[in-house]
Length: 153
Image 1: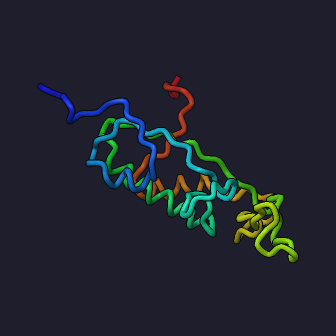
Image 2 (image 1 turned 60 degrees about the horizontal axis):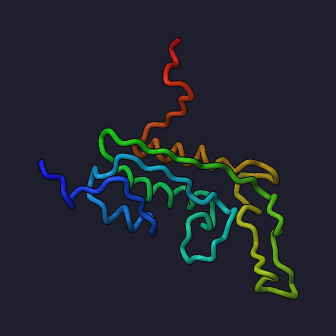
């Protein structure tokens, strides 16, 4: 069997994740390890970036769209490793409004996305990992957090 140029291994792809996944054939990936930008914590100054959606629900929906494509391209024996963390509501140092003297923001200041999250009070964790886990489970992923390979000892 000639595996020549048609098979690539140990490839790192560095481009927009959704566009890259849509270009990949079904069941062509054996492993995906990712740590997407956390909700509302960073602004990389790129239009359409993940993590700057208006609401946590939109953020989770966007990640679920990406991971639906990953589900399609992941081989039957493939594994998916996701590192995701939560954001706190109302603790953004930038506050709920900008300086009125500088409505476009001073020194790049922007209103914190996590200031006013529906259903959360100040200093609540928003629950992003749970929201995402439930969305992915509903899609067909298995939620697994085994810390040991054998849990029946």
